[in-house]
Image (cartoon, rainbow, N blue to C red; front, side):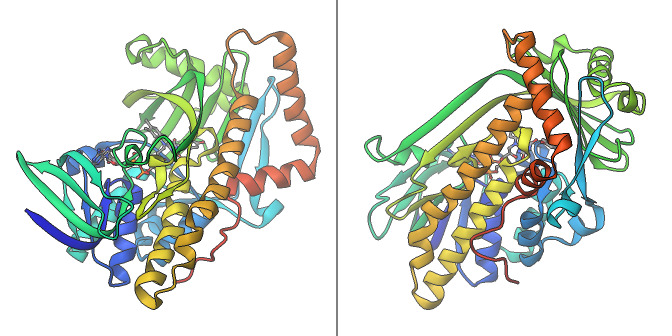
Amino acid sequence: MTITTNVVIIGAGPAGSLLSHILHRAGIESVVVERSSRSHVLERIRAGVLEWGSVEVLRAAGVGDRMDEEGHVHDGASLVWAGGEPLFLDINKNVGSHFMSYGQTRIQEDLYDAADANGTSFVFEAADVEVHDATSDRPSITFRKNGELERIEADYVIGCDGYHGAARQAIPDTVLRTFEKEYPFGWLGIMSETPPLPDLVYANHEQGFALASQRNPMLSRYYVQCPLTDNVEDWSDDRFWSALTTRLGSTLGDRVVTGPSIEKSIAPLRSFVAEPMRYGNLFLAGDAAHIVPPTGAKGLNLAISDVHYLSRGLIDHYGSGDDGTLERYSDMALRRVWSSVMFSWSLTNLMHRFPGQTAFDQRAQETELDYLASSTHAQASFAEQYSGIPFEIPVTC
Ligand code: FAS
Ligand code: PHB
């Protein structure tokens, strides 16, 4: 069976479901085609920090009410290293901005609730998605649903299908340029129903990196760096809490409220960028085009900024026929992507212990952190990058 629509979106993660929702509010029809089940997407535990620009995009899209009720606004985050007292990097004082703790899982629930209210067409458990005729005026996708081959023809195909998706594969190797870096360690993350530390804390320790984060006043999210060869089974809760509290240092480590983990997983770290983010009438947004190590809390935020830019281009196209923003999309999105990729790479290098790291390397990291503590200019630069550089297109309601 073949159906036609304005925009067909591959992937119902945060990028695809936010784009579909914003287009719906502008009267633009879309169909979202997702490989997994709705419940599987909702079960994923991922990001936890929203740049202020992302908060504004979600509010402007009308899906920010529960975020504003349950999210926690932070004026800054703390760094701790070499057994010293934590350094609170005051983002509000330095650049007049904030960030919000609000889990990606919640955002996904909010977006699916909005899709249900919109009546937008989502196809879950779609297999073998393929993009066809991306450079024609009528690109299409095919997929299998309950064994039946389906086709959707559209004006535009948007790949929001993540790093392992099908959309990027439709761009010929003669056109696509990719940039990749893999890190020689992973993050072991746990969730525990315990009160979190008040602030997010990033720790550089000779045993390795650690991060204290949160989801709500009774749900903590913690991470410790671990070897890529480790499995979750290698890490009992006791071993995890011991590593975390050691790496956070005595001041903060003594304040951690431990408890049984309700989720435990290991994520690999990589930096990846695919250029361009457009090929004919195929566009890429979110993890389909870029991946960052979670150190800088940028992955989800880049997905939201891509959608902010792309939705404006599509709204201009269907509204006034102006294709200027669509023409600029790839270059504009990539400027923000590379800025976040660089910040995430830089902070990962600063905060983690690399295999073969020498005493010199450790001392050099600590010296850079000492400089950050001593320089208001360095702190302002960190604050601007962590809370998110300004959008090239302002957010409007
Ligand atoms: P997503 O990957 O979320 O969504 C893509 C969707 O496309 C998925 O639902 C997938 O099932 C679907 N799909 C894939 N292939 C398909 C196909 N062929 N056909 C149809 N559908 C297909 N970011 C942070 O900022 N902080 C973090 O702490 C953090 N932790 C993370 C931990 C893990 C384990 C992972 C994998 C990512 C993490 N991220 C984190 C990054 C993450 O939040 C992403 O940036 C965010 O999910 C990006 O959203 P999307 O671009 O929508 O991609
Ligand atoms: C999280 O809360 O999951 C989180 C917070 C900050 C990061 C990465 C992950 O840099």
